[in-house]
Image (cartoon, rainbow, N blue to C red; front, side):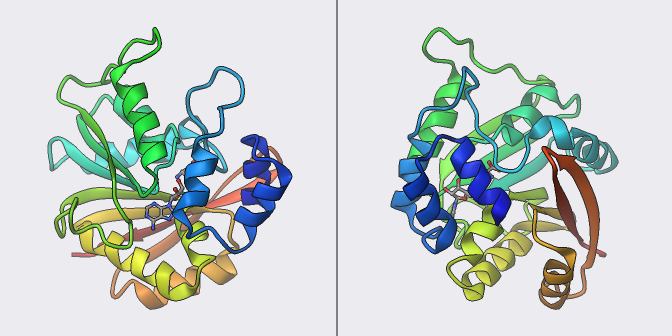
Length: 236
Ligand SMILES: C[S@@+](CC[C@H](N)C(=O)[O-])C[C@H]1O[C@@H](n2cnc3c(N)ncnc32)[C@H](O)[C@@H]1O
């Protein structure tokens, strides 16, 4: 969670807000709205917790290549915020992808839709494959039923969202995991990106992933911090 607080400060959140967010209120939507409304540092239109698309494209693109059965491949980013994960996949993947970013913050979703459609003199984003799609919608990741059918995504991404939701208690984090697994196709992969230690996260995921295979890859260090990708794969 030290990485989360550092990210909050990097985003320009003043210390009091970063302190509040990093302690106990990360389930509070209004706090996230305030944070997502802060201007992005520099001219970069996106802001990423932990690290961005560039740092993990080497992990993501081979997964898309290997799972070519479904065209286009459906990808869900839960708690997408204003990260460049969805936009990176949409603009850089040479395999067709149908990417959905969901966040409960309307501020984050509106920001990403403006970026997608092009605004303030910026051109709309161009897909890396003509059949690729990208959408952002407001939804509670603890109840994805209004936006995602069971078994409908080949890849589900969670970068920092479990970490945020778990601050409000493990039952909520369990509900998030259970929704991610519900919408995952039988052979699909859920990836949680986090700075949480494998000694803590792996047993937690293994207990709750019901017959799926859980593995871990070390990432980084990025700006001096080691991160982890926790992969939960269907075995059927
Ligand atoms: C630590 S930030 C990570 C944002 C983004 N994934 C990234 O890597 O930059 C957590 C995100 O989860 C969102 N979030 C928290 N609880 C949520 C919930 N119950 N449903 C949907 N989004 C949620 C917040 O608005 C925030 O954008």
